[in-house]
Image (cartoon, rainbow over all chains, first blue to last red; front, side):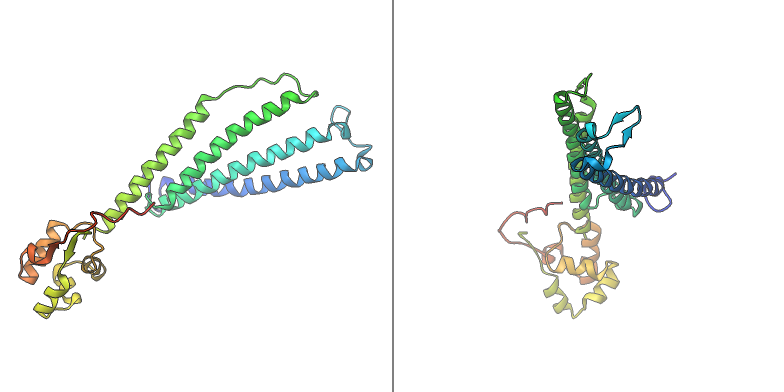
Length: 174
Length: 77
């Protein structure tokens, strides 16, 4: 089975990425709306006086935590959305049989940057949750794999930059 | 690029159009235009020999070295 071009593995993966992208757009919108609603209700607790979180806990007592959690989830999904969006566009060029399109360099850099932001965001959430009195048992872990992935993606971006340069050279060879 | 392509002058001398040369050599007009305007980065020996054959000239008649800036900066990809 071919890896590049129409009807190849790349085009199949592009379809999967399209589906994931649409689902993520809906997820980000839903999480952002929930966060906004929770924030509004947090400022007007009388509206939610009778709302109980499963287990019988009063919602208003945990509103900041819920809002923070939803905002963190929105932020996380928005980052993944950017990564999937860039991957979709890269796979569109692979499906077109043009892997060394000059724009793929910046797309890969964006993916590397977003992976780094996601990892840093994870540390930030640990740091914040360690302060919160209601959150216990925080175990921060340093993921070497994540940072390794970031570096690999940045190196791949440079490989693609060289590929794009060679493609340009080939175009101007008569 | 310090290499200048004299294709224009040779075409006038031979009273040949770019389209006719493109047909004879088997290179697209777009590629010959790139060569003629000095935007080409490299010329294949096969193209050069076909040009020399059709224009009845030597590679030195087509290409001239003029001292100048070595290379145009690469476009950032």
